[in-house]
Length: 576
Image 1 (cartoon, rainbow, N blue to C red):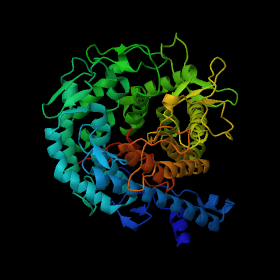
Image 2 (image 1 turned 180 degrees about the vertical axis):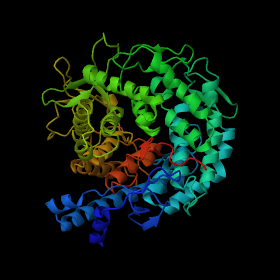
Image 3 (image 1 turned 135 degrees about the horizontal axis):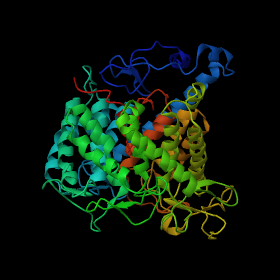
Image 4 (image 1 turned 135 degrees about the vertical axis):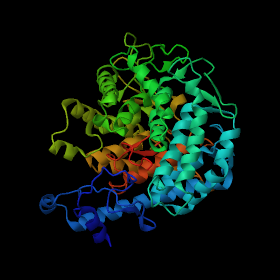
């Protein structure tokens, strides 16, 4: 059987035109998606195929034996299955104690509505279950959405525009695509795709008021669903990242619904930000919906800044990259920003030279802070994706497609993801803190190490008491997944497995679910009573994909929104 798997992976397949209007693919191999528990199951009709991973010549000259390929495939399929089992365990706790609530409190065994009460975990987890082929959960989540979500959307109160868009709207749109979308053949599991599309449209119509009621192109941050009204946050400001991390979802909804109003409103934000003054492409983390101007000078790629840079690239990629000249300004803004990152924010730690991205809390003329949020660990994956546009590095090099800037960004991506991993390995639990500081020539605080005395980087990384919590965040494993897909270096899988084992050891709750931690530097760690929706929607999804077939959800056919919901590139399933 293992030999058969290797044969499927390496056998050349003929090319089929990708200019069809039918449904884009979750798996670019021969009309099937690989599911380690249920075998091979037909998922979509006549998908375009990708070239084999190795050419016949490469196969002949490779020193890797078929037996070794079989062993490696079996090893990682086994690890992938363990991630799938973790997902089922996480869902079991949520279903038992919190079904319909936004999040599970696994220690007190109850649910909590911390995101507006739209059942965020249900929607966030759905496409993960689809990708993993866990049909029971697809049925349970899909049935709940079909039965309850529309009513909640019409009756609930305040929700955050950004969080609701990336988690709920993004989850519905991805579920629409993965369940068959506009294709004739759909999956037999869960509701029909139109249920997800109709619910997404209903939600988006409510969220649009954040754009249309604002006096500037910058939307208000909060929406009252039952009143069809919106307002600014208490301080009157919107986060730059939140206002600029809506476009993938609204553009795709316009693409599949045929109604351009969603895209038009969302894209006004980026078109407006294009006109604002920046610091070498970098922007402050707050922006005013009243004036449309940036507020303050704080520049960082952590909270309130991060996904602005991510969406500059991904919106351009999703809309067809250089095929659409109207959006080339987004790629130019992205490239300028990454140059700014390398020039102004990238430093090395003392004594061992870890490359990290710091902050400029008072702008370019102020002092540099060697502080790096875990959220910044999205950046290695984004840099790698921007360099190769989703293809492997070897193919991009072979076809002479990488510029000097691409190579610089790819090198930085590999350096940064190592640093992100070391913030895990330096702790007693093997799990990363929410925030790390780095020892540099003019800054060091003793007594705040991660607790793992055998780590080479014990004195490079500073973890303050207030920053030692772990929220089950996905950003590091997200970048490991992207870097593995692009570089094909197995060390990224090995690092991912170490992180997964630490999650299993310290965050798993026996009665169901996983929990956040108070302090990753002490063993046993005190546990927080919360399982964030993104643990099912992102962290476990990226780990599952990291250990699996690289043709499943290929990076040149999909972009992941900032909540890990895959969206097909270039409107691949427009309605007929």
